[in-house]
Length: 139
Image 1 (cartoon, rainbow, N blue to C red):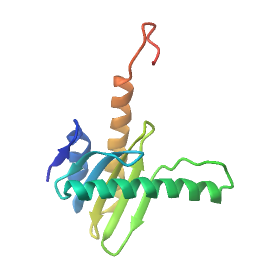
Image 2 (cartoon, rainbow, N blue to C red; image 1 turned 180 degrees about the vertical axis):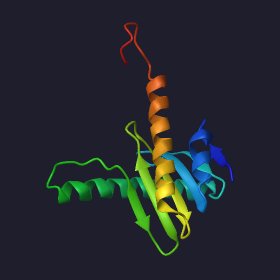
Image 3 (cartoon, rainbow, N blue to C red; image 1 turned 135 degrees about the vertical axis):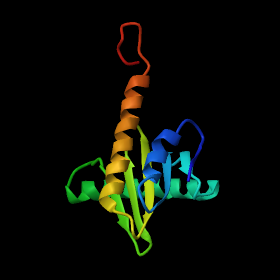
């Protein structure tokens, strides 16, 4: 499997696909726009997954805040277990998100480790690429 890109995103998704029994992955913005997806998905399916993932994240943040009796909450991951397998959603600190789907045989610990590793790499790349002013401070 390979990833279909709307930018240079293959380096994020390809390592996730190397986990046995991972079927598909999507890189999206927090508001649900696709920035990359794997071949197992058509573009309409990737867009639908991105929109649903964005909604699930919002609902998870709201639920976590409600349970904590707080105004807001940031989520670290969302795991959905179904009779078909697992969906793992991991947001980044800079407004993107990785969502991956593994069938019922996937080892969830390996999937989570790989997705979180790729999210960390995304954060490192975002820090390196952040625009700087003349004084070196972030713009």
